[in-house]
Image (cartoon, rainbow over all chains, first blue to last red; front, side, top):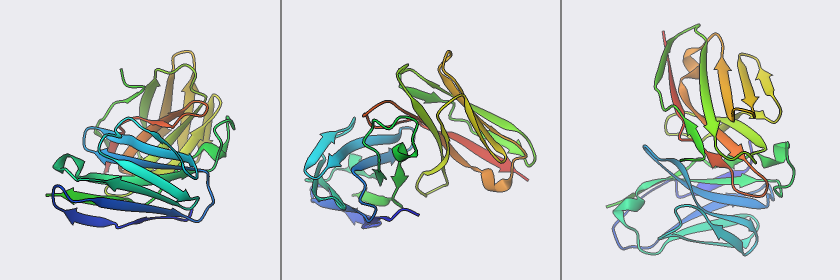
Length: 119
Length: 109
């Protein structure tokens, strides 16, 4: 299995507190992603990174920020958590540059997930 | 219209049955496709990649119809362990992969 770990795996916090989720990879993959998964919505992309210090927004980026200061780490921060951010958060990595059409390099590998509850 | 659409199910089938799921995509520029499997409270894991007209791996067959813009997944001789949610994914160029909401399968003894 690809080396990708998320921490913490479970967290309960209160509304208004800051929360940081960490994704760590040992594969030296270029692309890293943060998704949230909620019943009825499936996987939704929050932010992604295509290199150190290079990030972009996904479809549900409001209320979230990210940072990638090293290839191996991608942090997701909720500056002031709200109950609507209660969710399961998945990190994913991808090796390819995007131009390798028809290639296994475009496969996403997911971390085990971080379950966040905001009370 | 969502870019990748799937019937959410659930599909309840007996052991040994053959079951098929369809997935439609709206971006005609999509170049590669994937089926992921997700068990309850676990992360999605790659089941199959679909780059050309189709792919087969044991009891699983994926087919791609570019003219009608759909991908199918066929599971033969269903096992209890096949019970999971199956996610359809499309990819185009240098953009993030797009996931469907998933189809839930329950194989019953």
